[in-house]
Amino acid sequence: MCLIGAMCLSVSFVVTVILVLGVVFVNGWTDAPNAIATAVSTRVLRPRPAIVLSAVFNCLGALFMTAVNARVAFTISNLVDFGEAAGGRASVALAAALVAIVVWAVGAWYFGIPTSESHALIAGVTGSAMALGGFSSVNGGEWIKVVQGLVLSSVIGFAFGFLATKLIMIVCRHLDRRRANRFFSRGQVAGAAAMSFLHGAQDGQKFMGVFMLALFLNGHAMRAPDGGFAMPLWVILLCSLVMGLGTSIGGYRIIKAVGMDMVKLEKYQGFAADLSAAICLLFASLTGIPVSTTHTKTTAIMGVGIANRRRSVDFSVVRDMFVAWVLTFPGCGLIGYLTSLLFIKVF
Image (cartoon, rainbow, N blue to C red; front, side, top):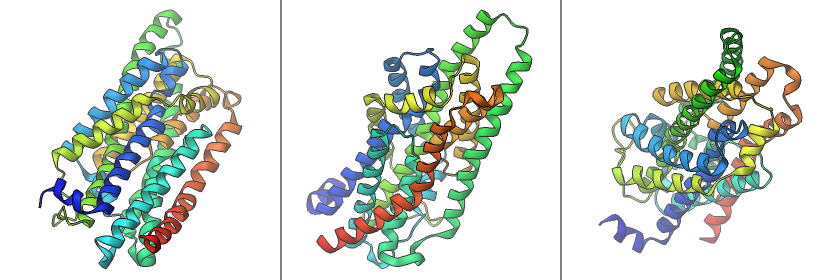
């Protein structure tokens, strides 16, 4: 049976696909603006052109990296096991997880807090699977990669941002300021494009993995011997375009929180933050470790700010971000768990 015909016969499958695409859209809307926050805050790019640039490169990143190396998508699709409930109950539980992610993400966007959509996705899917099979439904080996990614994105992002800023300050201390600013302005445009590309490469793959999981639970995809999926081109294209569309809607509140409220950046600092975060994301994408682009970028900005002087960082904003990050796993996981129980009972 063709996929379109299957969707016509399965209401739960249609709802799940719509929700997956909704979450991809929300990710592009609320998470992707982190990639361009520094370029906007230093006035290298105006918000609207920056958002258009980010939308295009998010789409390209999701498309290209998935075709080259889909290991991040495989990690996400193997994160939990829905067990013998494949089909009806599992599809309903996955739909409930996606509802939880949207609720969490939109709430964070409303308050202008750059939470991690990646961790919301992981927590929501894990909570929904546990509603069906308890702790035995969690794949500990894949969760270790999530923890590794959390440490990598936070520690290395901060360290690279700090070191890159110190190095630039030493190398460029005798340069003419106007000439240096022209160089770093061009560098920030390239950095914003690179960050958007790698955001698509990381987060695009994560949601493609969930899309393939939805197809699998409804009998429309088969796992490969290594536990992954053969990623169809239409899935890559669809998720890439929807993420780009979400980014084009814009997320000025997130841009303001990350690039303006936390640290007042100069052009060389914005360049250092973009370069540091991009290197970290590229390494993670090539090695298949699912990291948070939000954590990577914001900790890189913190490192940049502290490298200049500690008082340049508004730690009240940092505190709010860290509280949101800490609450994402238990909060979104609990919402996913309770929503799954409700949906299974109702549907």
